[in-house]
Length: 534
Image (cartoon, rainbow, N blue to C red):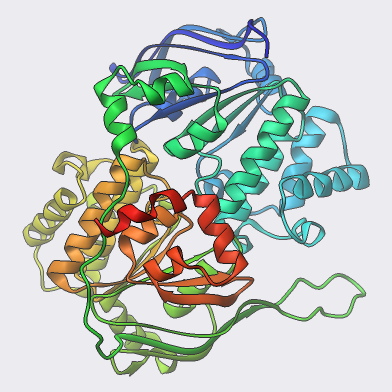
């Protein structure tokens, strides 16, 4: 590791319309090291990295010195910036679905990066794309070259982003929540891969994350931010063992804890039997049509009133696809009984009327929120559709009450999604779901974009809502620490099949399959399991 900084920020200050969001931030990244930038959602982590690379909107102002490998980044022309971004600097953005072009397949998007910076085209570019997808541990790499972003799971999309970021051997890699959408086993694989690439190419890495467990395992130094200011920085072991800032100490202590309120055995609210989902593979010219891909193989599940069923598994195991099938958002086979009503037999207006009784919080909050609508309209849209009898004042009052419940101020109701951090956008998505007072909520990675302290708050909120209203949850997550705090029962998926199911604590304490054991070990839960009963 070199003592000379590869990347340096000195007194970086960023303001929007005169309002400071980052103040006097100084940091440096050396060759061969990983610097972790941590803090709560909205603390200025991501905006600092975007500002350093000249990616701020027109209403932003920036001051301070920025330097990369001897190059002064202040005042670069657009042509020079194009050489830097994607070439000397690779960037893995937080939300892959909004960063990937929905009109281009995976191979074309990676090829574009190779063409712009290396001049690779045709079969040479395709071979290199295939190598990159294999390098980031994507299964069926040759097949996924022709896949579209919407056909991939959240974790698969994130790995495509990482492949694009490392395609040109950058000197600096900025990874903004690179493992947010990944399960715990793939998190370790990806971060080990990034560390391997860092060492091979003597590359520096700025690792932006809210996951302190990953920082502890994979970073050399850490800088802690709060409300746009650096609270403290230093070697990871020094900061984590002896934090000097009260905020750092509170961040280290934050962890979802406790257990959901026990529920008595009751007739299931949702009873699904023989559910399976298949997708037709693309057909190439002059080739026989391939067999369909089975994303979810026939399985049964049930959720009782007031119960939380946790669904865990690797990226691409079928978790989100299963949830979409249960909500009738993708075609499926099998029977779906919701409180005595066969959803699989409904269509049109009959199905829409039932949908007021179940809601969903999607994995990617930015992709699921309309960029052209203010928060108040986003949250109240479903309410206004299903309850036209409410007047404007009643609707606004419910919006304000719901914003307060999820920890957002009333004043944010007139703002737009792009004005919020990733964690704040996820809370808006939760508010949109619970304002309908549903009986069942499908939560697809609802805490993946949140820091630990906000995760703990959201888990407490969801449990309290469940206790007061008797809501049932279908809780999909790769974060086993959050699952153990939320779920009564757990269902483990692998390659679209159920490999294990049962009481949540029983499965986590005594996993019956090697696959579940690997998930528990990768999450580092074993040493913390005795505290679960508290």
